[in-house]
Length: 263
Length: 257
Image (tube, rainbow over all chains, first blue to last red; front, side, top):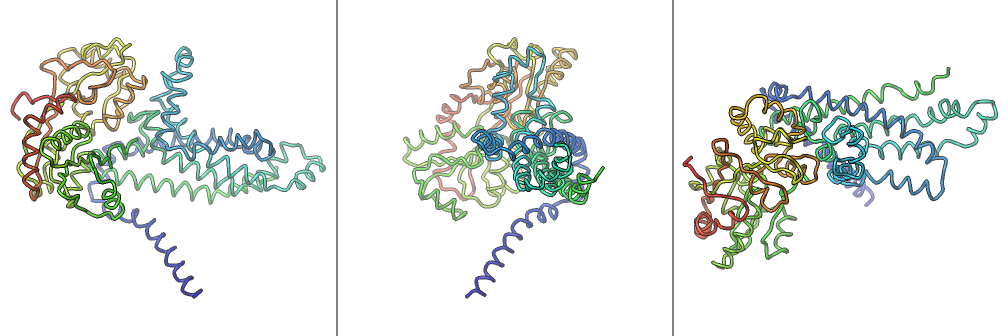
């Protein structure tokens, strides 16, 4: 009986792997010879650089603002901290197109801050800034929440010991907390980056679609699907390749060693 | 939002049957209802026409509205359809043609200029006064039509006009719905969309001047093995039933193809 159960469990798990893998294999197998040059003609590289550039900015902003927030969330357990943690979770469960509409409602020309922004000469929709904001919005929970959890797991005793040895609070954070949380820090960053790289719905609504300005790779792919599917397939595989490359790079970069390097 | 219309099935008086069809992923027959596959842009008008036809003939009409290329692939794959009304004749070519009887011209939809009520755009000639213009992507039919109109208009209004227009184009949206939404939300001042999209919106609508306009020609075709009622419906749609499409901005086509 237990044997049968084990075999069934294995079969089910393996079936899921097949199901997850098959579409990607099919995507690669259905390519034809002229698709690559067609994709290049349709602005594959321009869209890829825009995707990489915008997600790099979004990831940098996320690390700079998300790390202090995660630390604050980890150190507080009050009503306010729990509410704020819930709020940070919100974009992860919001449909991306709705996120785009919400971003327009806040920062659009007809939005809440639209008048103030346009008086200051700032127009966000249809710009690279809108692309980055959309990515930041949807990706933030994937970084902040796991990192806050990792910070919580750092033993308080350890922090007190370090402080009693004369280490300053900033040094404790950079030399003890960050190195100990490094795997989660890197994993969270990779997930957030991947989410930003794949961002489509919010970007489409909030930033629009102009090649070289706001047309990221996912949007270029969807635009191509109006016509021939070949170039869209190539673009999808390139996006996939870069996402995998990003994961591999972050994993082998051994960020924990860099972070943990004693000075 | 971008999946809008992909699975919009309506006019169905048999929700249970619909759920069963969806859950079994099977091609199931819905009694003797007429199954109309219509382009997303015709969907709403087609539903009204279908209801009128049901009241008139007693034959139930079930409209599936989606992107023409999606419907086309479904029909090619053997989906149960009786009448096919895509957004252009191009969607009748290739493998799908083997399942269709000879198509007929249904009617015409015209690209028009729409503008926010407060903007200073009053016609195509003053499109360059918009602060932000949104057009369809060149890959989308509405974007291709917009490019054709702008190319002709450049000859009439001049290169300087064209450069001002080009400078103000902030986005080439994926489909006509996205284009319209950007103007309705107030993020863009003006756009080029179909008359059928503009109908019923609070936006200012300006026709494309004579000599510059283009016609989007919508065909209708009966699927080869469809019952005789399908032919009756398609014929009625082009005759008396066309009033329902006219209410949504369609017109009789002017010139022969």
